[in-house]
Amino acid sequence: MNRAFNDRESQKILDIIKNFARKNSLFILAYGTGCGAIEIPPTITSRYDAERFGIRGAATPRQADVLLITGYLSVKTLKRVIRAYEQMQDPKYVMGFGSCTINGGMYWDSYNTIKQLDKYIPVDVYINGCMPRPEAVIAGFVKLQQLIQQGKALGWKHYKENLEWYRQNQQKVIKNWRMPDYNW
Ligand code: SF4
Image (cartoon, rainbow, N blue to C red; front, side, top):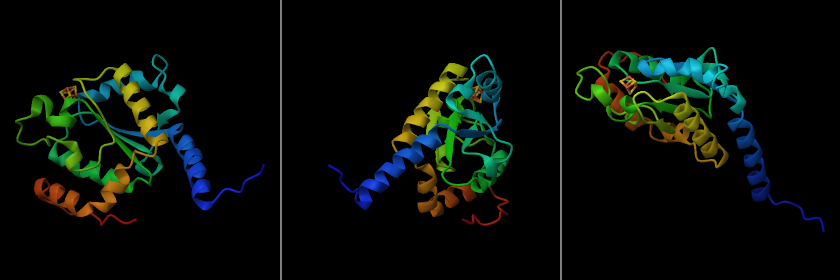
């Protein structure tokens, strides 16, 4: 017997299809802030072949879905990372590589690095280790894909809804704040 879908059911099916497409086509912008960046070339080239999972590089923030922060971040670099993140189109995702993005890592008492990335931009997946191997990086991507499929990779929404909180944290450490407004 045929049964017409109601609006809610149709929306749910549409979301499943959209999320399936999103998770299988991830264009990454790798911001090589720290030593973890050295694990990106083997991850995306023939040895570990991340393209099997639909993962490949993007040339600019406006063409990227995933921002990779590959290690420690100086305050000076944080400003550029925020600018890059805000130029990306929604939905967008962030992955933090290595202990330095989680708790400062070996730079925990440095005067000029940030200690917890998700106080400044929303992080969907952290990959721990110092530095994480390509296997761990790929496992991080698989986790991100699962979250996207489940509709749970919502850092980009969290950023919009809590922009004031993020701005306060960002401006606390970036003293020479002169940036264009985040304009959706
Ligand atoms: S976690 Fe280790 S490998 Fe990664 S940026 Fe920090 S010190 Fe370098």
